[in-house]
Length: 345
Image (cartoon, rainbow, N blue to C red; front, top):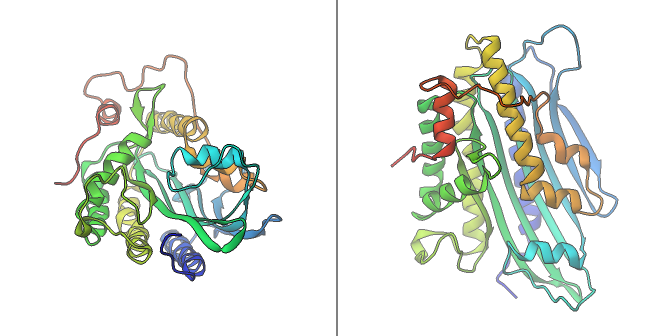
């Protein structure tokens, strides 16, 4: 059995509830004339609960003027049993997870996390995604024994138009949060983010990256090979401290960017490009995203909350020429999406 703090479940659940409230309050304060987020608590029949906080405007023929077009800041704190098929699929990404192909026994699990996606209305204001989570599996013969535990999370920025100052601010804020907990973290998890949020059938990334990490526990990590004791957190307490730092860095990494770009002048052509980029966002989330797939296959899954990440409006065009013009603002973004850059030293 791995080293584990029995209070981690409650502590992590309390943290994501606090973080959710802080983020939603900050977004509401940014646009006080907009409708508030809908806060919706739900119960999972198989065990646990969630709180979905969602922003959207009712359909109308009159154009809306809110800063946000659609947004969701959701938490879930659930428990139940993982069937062998789910364990087999998860084992590929979580080596510490016990799996016996001959055993029909379900594994008791607990999962808590916050997941958010913010789609602003203005084409110059970037979409952002973030997720912070904790997962554990217990012994079905003795549920006081933890067989495996890990943390995961990260945040990433998806602009329609590239502002290099925004990219540097976003990445610098995340790197500062990482560096306080280990010199290996930012580089390892920035690279992982660039690789994870890649759309193979398009040959381009979803956005300009950020952080992505998973399966972070007290064992050596394949994304941090050879990391010394001082280069990364190794215990549940120090990893939890790092995850809190990453979560607390979300608002200072993103809110100033949203404030700068929310009211920038824009054209119909720029709106068209924004909707085309949102189409790419949909493609990644429905075809490639591991979290979406896991959520949809979890017994008792709340589909409304899982698909909250999708934009309200997106566009696909057959053989679209937008972005193909050399030197265009759209083309500059595509260059970065096809070849990720280092935004901070």
